[in-house]
Length: 401
Image (cartoon, rainbow, N blue to C red; front, side, top):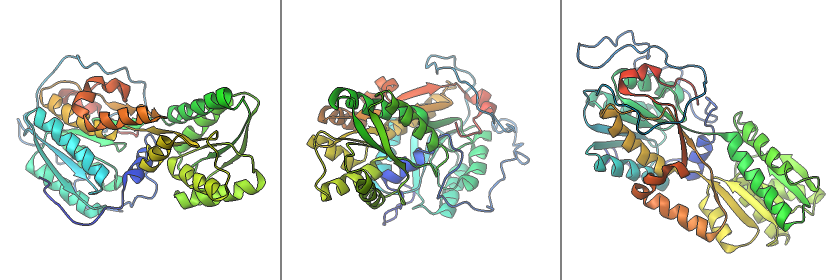
C-alpha cells in the first residue's frame, strides 16, 4: 500500500507526462517549478564519509559529458553486492490513473523478485516530494525510482542515494544510475517516414502538409528536424504548407491554428505533430466539413482519444506511443539485479511504437497490461545502452542522456 494516499487528482495527467518525457535529452524541464534552495544535502559528498561497511562513499560528479554507450549486455559479469535493505521506493508525483499503472508495474516486478515496495504521492507538490524522498533515504532503500518534478530539488537527493549505494532509476532526470530517455530525432523521423509512405502509396505522391512543431522546447527541435527529413522522402509532390507551433499545447490550440491554416490552404490533406495538436486540428476539419477518410493525420504520445480515432478507420491514421508501464516493470527488475551485484543499463531509450490499426493498438494495450510477459521481449520497446554496477556506481550519468 502507498505510504501516502491522498484524494484529488494531480495535474500531471498521462499526456503531460509524455510531454515531460519528450524532454528526454534536454536537461531542462520547461514549465516545472524550480526551487532556489532546499534543506537537503547539497550532494557534494562532504558529509558522506559514513561508518566503515555502510557502503556510502564520495562518488564525485559522475559522467558529465555525453558519450557513445555500447549496447547493454544482460549477461555481463556480476560484482560486489550492496548491503542494503531489499526495498524499492517510487517517488510518485500524481495519483492519475496512468501513474498508478506505473506503480502497479514496479510493484509487480518487486514482488516477483522478493523486494519490499514502498511509494508516496506528492500531488505535484515539490516540497512534499522532497520530504517523501528524504523519508525513503532515512528508512533505507536499494533503489529509488523517480520522475521529474523539480530537478534542482531532486538532484541532491538522487546523488545522495547513489552515494549510499542505491540504484537511482529515473525518467529523464540526472543524476542517475539508469536513465530513461527518447531519441527525439528518431521519434520524429519515424513519424515523418510513415507519413511519406502513405503519401507515396495512397496519395500518389501529392500532399499539402501541415506540421505542428513545439520548438519552444529546445530538445523537440530534433524531433521537428527528424519529421521534416522523413517527410521529404515522399518526393517533390509533398509540400509543407504550414510549419508552426500553435499558441498553446492543447487541443484548442490545435483547433484554432488549423482554422487559420485552412483559410489560406483549404486543400490540406496531411497533418503531423503531437496528438494534442492533431486532435484539435481534426476537430477543426470536422467542424468545417473537410475531414475525409483518405486524409492522413498522425500524432505522438499514444493519446487514448487518438487511439479511439484510429480504431474508427477515418482520417486519423497513426500515433506513436511509449511503453511507460514496461518502464516501471524494468525498474523493479533492475533494482533486484542491483542488489545481486549485476549490471543494469545506464540508459533505457524508448522505441516509439507506431499504432496504426486496431490490431496494433490491441497488441500494444495487451502488452502494457501483461508486462511480466512483455518483459521477455523488451527489446521491441527499449534500446538499452551502457552498463553500471553497485561497485562502479561512480560512473553514474550526470547529464540528460
